[in-house]
Length: 521
Image (cartoon, rainbow, N blue to C red; front, side, top):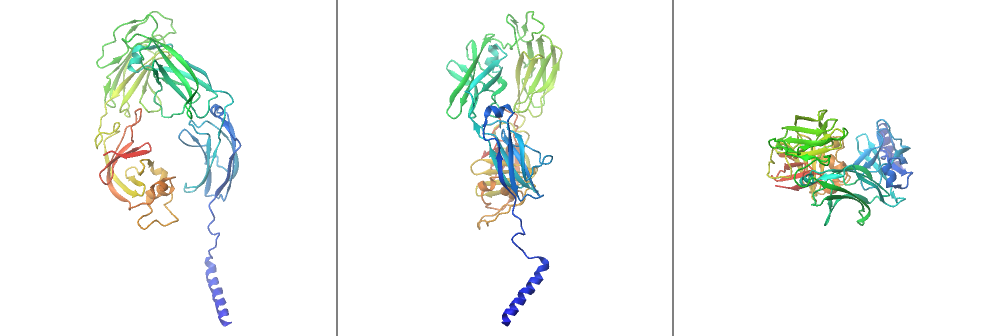
């Protein structure tokens, strides 16, 4: 009896001592918030409805456990990445809510997709849900309602030298989501692609663009638009355009030269590529044609001066556009009222491969294109590589850490992290994408001969989707070394194989970029 009393007194005394400090209990750490439901009022959508831009859906959601340190974000997937639907700073989403949102075509072969995320104050993703609106069958059969061009003839010499271009417009209805538009030139023994390089494979059902036919030795050129189901390669619809080849094979007469023009010799300019001089018979004041267009020199160093000279017939003057491959838009370098003139322009610094100059008559009813080749001013530090260096090599401090399924490299001068996986794929993380992420924290202990990465490597490893799963545990601690690195100029079509070349601690050289890597030296 006395022992029981003493034990009870001891328990009461311990409780009284701990009471001021608070006893731990199961609810001291609230569970993380979660998304309970995320739904769309639109069960399916035809591709034609999505391309029209007029379709909408009501997205509804329910979350639990949302407090002031958490927020909701809504994204939709378009082209090749997630785009914000509502700015969380100006139009925050409620823990339980509904919003009417437009349903636009994602500009790829996937259906419209929305992503709802719970984000904490450290920008870490706590929970996510995806809603996909599947494609519905089109109501009508596939039909090419129009496939047209403003041109009727093509110059034989332009076809031979590869500078011929044909502007086309198209409109397709009833197209299934698994189909692609294919533009070809019909040849006597088959067909070949007439498409110019482009960064994205999917082509909208209605649009306009340029095709690039080549010489076939025939008196006509036939261009064909086909709608092809990529699942079974079935041709669902096709239409053709036929243009007459003019000018023989002697000189490159630009489009827009009227019948009966007398062709004479081009002007004499050293190392100049030019259109032939054409004597144009009297024409109406609304007609315009290119008499000559000359560019010199034809091979230059980056930043060099280029001489442009032109002579056109008609009114309205000229426009000359400069295009560096794999850049966004042409740059107008000449906009002159005079039908005849010359000027000097300078190559942009980013041009490392070529620059194209296109002379347009002001009404844009005739044009001529000439390409200038750019001499690559530098070499790669390790030998031959694909492309031209953007600049000379540089040395900086770096860190390297091997993992079970690859390795990580940190670049000291830019604080970027490269992740190279054993299967040849790669990731690339800028400082702003990982600096605010939390340190790596894992629930399980690594094996005795393995470890958890720390600092920037750890933040990327623990928080970037898929990185930990593919890399596995670190097998050695992070170690510093001096890296030699060199960037690759990208202003080329097709783009070079890699964006960077750099050394590893063992002296080997790797190329990395565009989601891939490999050892090159």
